[in-house]
Image (cartoon, rainbow, N blue to C red; front, side):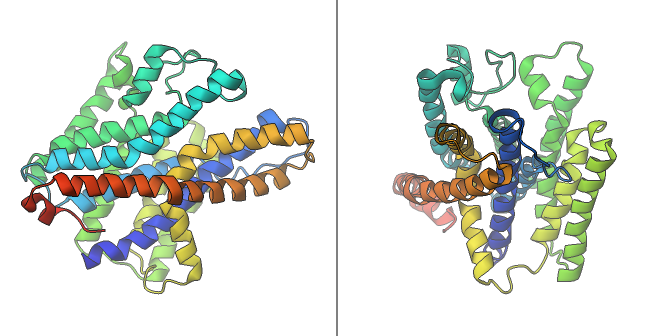
Length: 364
């Protein structure tokens, strides 16, 4: 139990960084493409903010294995894992999807595609990849494409948990690899195979590797940890500025640097002295899922308000202001909506569990 507490703080900080990177990238795109296309603007391009998604995937693999490593081959372990993951990601995502549906009916293309069809709506709630009316594989809430990968990985990981640990990890790797191979080799693979068969799924396996190394006792000094983190950032920048990122798969130009950064953070001594800044960043990490899921609404609302009120054509003023407002707003949603829902659902699980199941449940 003590070991679990030592990693959560540093991982929460990294989750906040990942969510903020995605938010920042989308704000820059909003300024360039919608709000101020003619204003003088020099965007920050040395790092693609989309790497936040790669960080999330590696972190997800790390957390899944670390908290479930002792559940392999135990009765009910797979079902318990799936239920807990579903209750963690689905409520807020469903609320955001319903909000997006309401917004598309109210203001149409000012928010998203106009009136998604029934099949796309159903697929969105089932976390299944499907074509939208633009011919793009995306759910009603477009950024939910990442959740389609998450839930796919949850399902495969849940099957692996039913097996002994070593066998389960081998099976997990083989299944993911087989789907990737099928997507690459089949002339016309089915949509779900083509989507789930992208090499980006290996980022989850990278996170599992980080968890295995951590659980086996790998620890680095602060100097070596920062060298690993800095090396990941430097590789990210080098691939971006050299143009090589356009010629290699995302699992390489985003996944490898993300893996290095996550490994450096996880095995470093960054929770030894938790000052006010780290506690503040950890709070942001707790709200990172809300930041990620809800930030498109904040950005679009800010754009519409900026246009209506005649805000100054100063891109960095808009970006800085909206960045702060969206983060604070998402934290409020986390505290007032997301966390209470999560606590109530967890309490319901505890009440319905048997005494043996209750004893096996993680505390906190």
